[in-house]
Amino acid sequence: MKFRGGYNIRFQGKPGGLLKDILLPEVLYLPLESGSFNFSALCATHGQDVGLGDVLAKDPDNHDIPLLSPTNGKVNLEAAPGHITLEDLSDDSSKSYTYHDELEHIHKKMGSAGLKRYKLLNLGAWEFVKEAYTGQIPNPLSTPQAVIVSTFRLEPFLIRGDVLLKEHLRQFTRGLEHLQSLLAYQPIYLAFPKIKSNFAAKIKEQIRGYAWVKLIEVPLKYPYDSFEIISRHIGLRHSTGSIWGVNVEGVLAIDMALTNSKPCLERAISVAGPGALMSVNLRLPTGYPLSKIKNEYGLQNSIAIDGGVLTGRLLTDDIKGVPTDCRGITFVPEQLGREFLGWLRPGFGRQSYSDCFLSSLCSHFPERLTNAVKGELRPCVSCGFCEDACPAGIMPHQLHKLIYQDDIDAVEKFRIDLCVECGLCSFVCPSKIELMQQFREMKQTILKEKEIAAAEAAKEAALESATEAE
Ligand code: SF4
Ligand code: SF4
Image 1 (cartoon, rainbow, N blue to C red):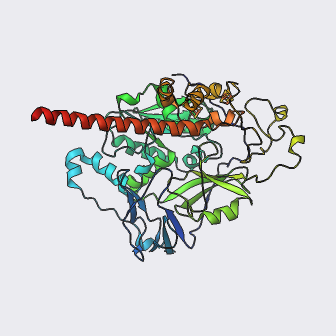
Image 2 (image 1 turned 180 degrees about the vertical axis):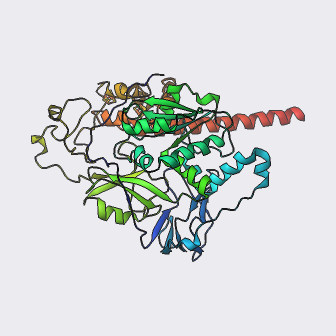
């Protein structure tokens, strides 16, 4: 498949290439639920003293991915509902984490590769490995047909992949070696932006000797950093086996776990957006209080989003700390009332895909991006912008109409399954229809219906074979 569609939104206020370390706060709030995880199996008790890397809870629906303690402290299960609160924090290294190898049965079944994967799971590195087509966490003991490592990130306001890569190039290449040691003969594709720079040349030089790494050059256009889009481009099909996707942070976590036997307890996130006082990249422990980030970096009357501006989820006030899968916090000004004399500024201060605003006459300028829709909510005007921008080659406007008609069979025929949920269709739509949200929900509905149908078919088959046996 050739790359098609895609669009780079010309927002200003993206974070630069520097990473700032943040000191340990007085208290950490570790959310038990996040976009990807539900740590419902508690392992720590109220009042317990825990050490760096101790398991606080596990996600039973996600291969028991652990929620690890980012530091030494005392567990408080009552301070904030839905969180494990850690108090009396200290990063005293005398209590540093040690890993104990065990699990004879895994060693017998899968040898040293099996033990390594189990170690990655226990040390919090496995949560960075994703199924390319579904975004789910793969079974640590499964075997993929290929692995895609992405070195860049393109969604507006998220931390760029090269920020970590520049600081840890040696660890990154060592992490790639570890990744290869988990596989038998399956290839690793290293997705790399099609750019000419000294740094790009340096990376290519570093991996020159790795015959098992195949370099894939990808245009720097959103959302070509999507594992699903890259898989389709390479010709790797979901139906022929699992494909793992790992980003730079994941490769570094793998290196940390397998070289140093250390858990991955910090996150590198961006704090940016049009509602941010300044745009920065921060390295901080998971559970870092969101109130501190909001007070320090967010403008008053801004809403905070967990993730990028196109696909992120709203961080409501009941979420107290940085979630374990957080990639960035994007601030967007909240416009509560009508804009004063807004009609005098028809499209000034707003970048547009369609070049229909007067702003298209200007070059780059700070976007007046807010959460207000400014009266655009209206039916589809069949402009075709969504189809033009869609990287999956489907027709979002047609799908929208079919969903409105509740014609699920036709929705499937128009290949809603190919949607990678990049959010570009919603962004470019001049009618501000929540297309991506509709597709996300419809995909879930179809999946559930298929699961119910499969369960009923299995039940009927079991009944039939029981009757035959009688
Ligand atoms: S239909 Fe899906 S893949 Fe296409 S632009 Fe919309 S969200 Fe992205
Ligand atoms: S961009 Fe919006 S208005 Fe235009 S065709 Fe797509 S759904 Fe319709």
